Length: 143
Image (cartoon, rainbow, N blue to C red; front, side, top):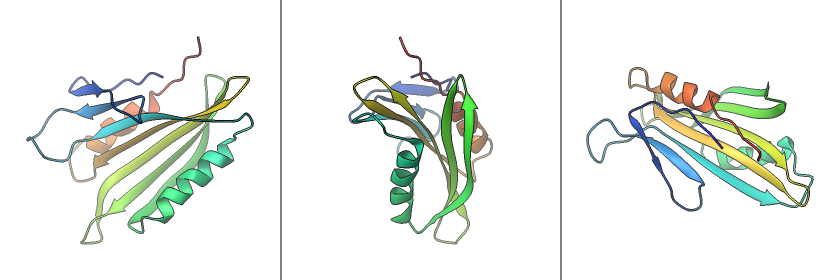
């Protein structure tokens, strides 16, 4: 998996994600924009509809999530599910932008759901645009 993140973001490795990129600007302890890359492996035949149901299940447990977009996009010969949500703060105004980009990679004996999930503060100038650019640069490279 590859991702073009802003220069001020650093790569981190932690389980269960494959890797994540995190904005390193701002004060220590403050919220930081990020993208987490993860893979879910199952038997062959997993579909984008399965990925959509998993995302729906996650979002359904979070009433502050409000759908912004729900698309399927084609890139490099693969179909991707792309969803965006506003996460409402205590005042009812958007506090965070939550973006998910997922695709299915068939590997013969299994299917991998590759997911790029990112968040950014809605009120921080340029944060959502940087997050969107990073998510939209995501690629899966098969060797």
